[in-house]
Length: 221
Image 1 (tube, rainbow, N blue to C red):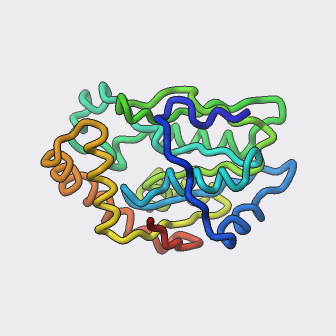
Image 2: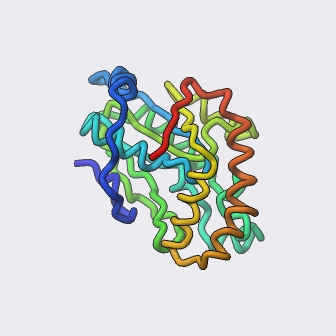
């Protein structure tokens, strides 16, 4: 069994996806082969929910390995003076993420690859929380910066078989973000301040890279 939920809070049931998207993902699943599908989008675009919906449709042929597992710890962010910008590209271990993608691409038939997850209840990454079995045909990796052209990040897209960008109405996306921030302890004012000064600058950076995606997916409630 895949332990892709370990270290993550419980999520509502994944919504149904259009059949054409499921068929496109299923076409990447070939027994004995490993493919990587990237799901990219701005904060609040619904990447995790979308990935879970794909997983629900594909079953044991797929696994989810989120980019967020490579957040630097709060201790390291504080040491580097980046805590106030948590979620920006330089607050992740990009080299670690690239190394994991490479390992997943070439996973041996006799090994289980353990990947980190991000635990929102404690706002920290958790090592070894996701077990990817060797028979998995499609690894779905989702995150903000899969298509970014900055050094290091620009290598991610080259390691993916396909990359999809989730296009979401900005007002809906910001509403989702505020709800998320408030669920995990921020006051309404603090949530809106974080969105304005951290999430939205990152969203603009991410939007500038959408042209590198192989597919733009309209995604809303």
